[in-house]
Length: 260
Image (cartoon, rainbow, N blue to C red):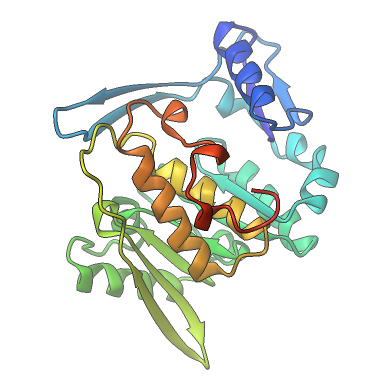
């Protein structure tokens, strides 16, 4: 993981959690100017819906130079995933390096900037994966009904994105790819959830699982379907990271590929 934390209890806790789960923290930087670790305060209502207040902290200090220092890690990766909670030019540099080393990259445009994203940034990513709200912000188009979402996803493709995968919460996902010179649309439903407890971590669970399945060699449509199942498991539990299932908790059909 390439990132930056502060010299505080939150940074230490994050390091320990990553090491416990087998994540390499070699490229993880530490802010030396007293900047604290980035935090997120999450409020959850009785329906499991959430509102999140983010303080960027050390995330805002991560530079393109920090990313360049991790070039060998990026070159050796099967999938590189980036988001927008760090400076935009830092995200851009990670995508440039992934492209240079022919590594599949996923851009999660969260939080989506009100001014949108430029064509170069969108085109650098192998896959752009927004939710409905982010899709509407990026395209300046309504994205509530399925027909509106599909139209906005086509619009994002036209703005430079090679592939667009929109997460739709309980409605599943909508994937737009190019096939024979035309846009091809695939709607994947979400799994049934008996009781929704907390949706706060569902998006991250989905996109992290998607990256893991793709890195194992799974085709994109199947990886999307499998990631939807894992995200459905997470919403039945409280919390974010602690709601994500471990390998031994997964049904056999979700453990078929090596490395998972």
